[in-house]
Image (cartoon, rainbow, N blue to C red; front, side, top):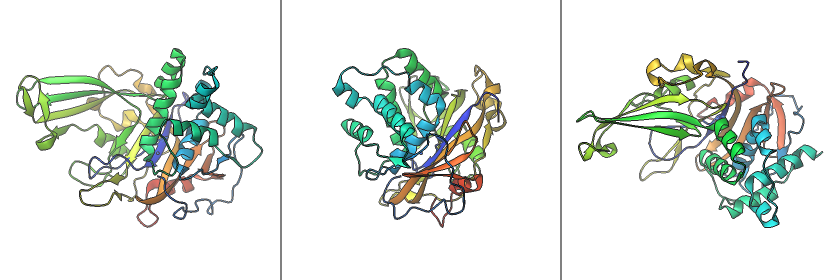
Length: 359
């Protein structure tokens, strides 16, 4: 646990449907369906205390994914400091359309409430104006990106918007090396999450989160349908793709890609166990070759786990909840829609994955 207070936002949820053997992790490293598939994760712990101001959010209609993400945002004090400093729109119609303003109103409503949960109806109406509707099964990673981009685009104070970017943005240096002429192109890539695989390039299961992170930064040979256009050869050629980590943010979001799509088949979920630690030191995980030579402040690349957004159930039928560690108390809590209770680390570990319970 480092003195700088860096933390990982770990959300476990279904990812994009691009490659058949990849899975993802979002810690606030983040499906939605019905509640009948929900596992009662509280029975194992008799604790019921909740941190001050932390209350539940009622489900408004397949909104467990949204509720889980909102709780992760609100429990991150570095985010709420930014949220409290936004400029309030002066026109009522603009207030109704402002996502950061409606989030601020909801946060204040939760902190004032003496009830166990509140209805996030005004924020939900606001999101509907931006085509994020109820009764839709969202992918948690995509919903996180949609929310973050709406927040960022609607913060009118440039300095605050920059602070939000600094808080969450990962910078990776990407190289493409043509295997025919050795011509090299490079670019800086800014990312909000690291989409991590569950299998390596040989389709072998990865055993830990650290293995998955290391695999993500392994060079990859792009051939066949994945070949890239070489400016020097003026045609598509096999290329070596290399990614080097350049800069890590204060809040690091990892995304385990547990869902995959096969042609002529249903979307499927990979539920096997992949343990993750309570702390990460990237200096111990990545090799010197996997880090950009200009990477600064590598000594600060140490993180404590802050939150896990987990999906239980099948790919086509499931439920989201969030496990979040209070930054002020250091205790873990489970946010399951309108229910909030204190849990133990052993309860959080159930989200490692299990083929029987479909975490």
